[in-house]
Image (cartoon, rainbow, N blue to C red; front, side):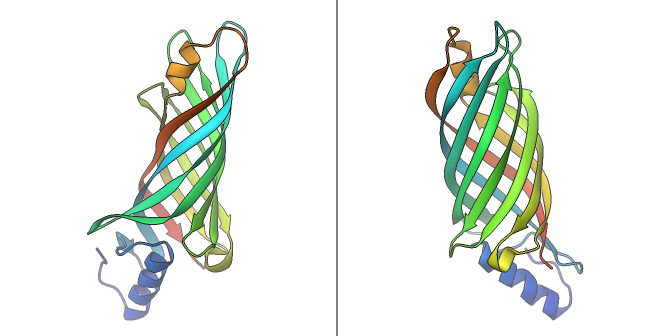
Length: 183
């Protein structure tokens, strides 16, 4: 839903929404900051490395499709690739993770970000997602917001037997309120 503002800001917000593949923008403030809700379903392949009896560390690359929530439901907005690291305690299930992402919009322009999170395996890892730049129409983009990272890393980590294991896994990334500003 677009909130009332001067017509040039509404036009700019709509242009940003179209660039991201969205049909609506949650917030189009006078400072040209917009808010979207988005999620990605990803697949990853990486190596699980036990670091002694506890913890296990997974180093992986996540690839997926990104969807932006619109009034008509989720709309495909592009793809994402994220090199990531997750550390899981085999004793209590606590996990931390971090990574960087390249979000490629339909049409090829990209938004770059970094993230970190804390949580519990099989429940989720919550943290911050920070936009660090972009290409093409996203050059100079800034912003960020909360992120929820979910995967099956906990199940994989619990099965570790003391040797590095190459493993494929799946999961989701969820941005409940991702704010961004274009110059």
